[in-house]
Image 1 (tube, rainbow, N blue to C red):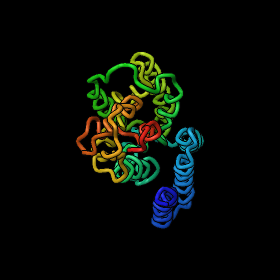
Image 2 (image 1 turned 120 degrees about the horizontal axis):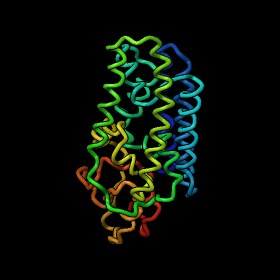
Image 3 (image 1 turned 120 degrees about the vertical axis):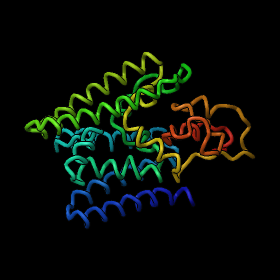
Image 4 (image 1 turned 90 degrees about the vertical axis):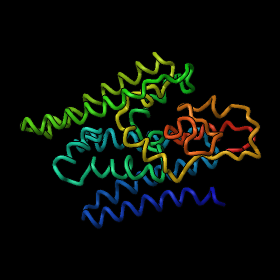
Length: 272
């Protein structure tokens, strides 16, 4: 019964956000936007409960393509981190600013790194590659994410300090070029490291927001120690190298869990 209520709980959370933003911003777009995302995620949770193996991929495509094509290409909104800095510097709580606040800054307090597993349009493509289970040990290259994070901030800051004209057009072009660079780097790294999620682990600047907040996340994978037989299957199939058998928030790679549920699906004793 608890599992059956989970999709409704997820939908209720997103509807609360949708209605609140619609009424406070007096813009019906937010009602449509967050209702659509909430319905997509709730559908995915429902399909997962029904043991449909492609449940997460369906959500990735529904949300990822919506944000990339509709919001990005059709609405000319830069939904990458540069768009967040842009709206932040202009003092406007719209578009990317709201997106980051809900999905990547405060949302992880509830859903952890769920964004990375179910909505990221970069990972949406990378997850089609052949290295779904990492074939090599994790590298100590996480510092790169802080470099890309700083570069994104410096880029937008330089545009404002230089007082360049037609900055909105530049931000749209930055969205196009940025996505091309992200996809190229992500695919190259996946083959180089034999790991679809290498880009997410080492380079993605958005994780600088996601990681500290997801440490306190409400939704987490937990292990029933009485059922666990220490077979190691959950660790083997985890794309982010998380030790889900440790229930501590300080477990290995704790803030890397993307709630993909591969560990849950592969546990032979339903201990997760």
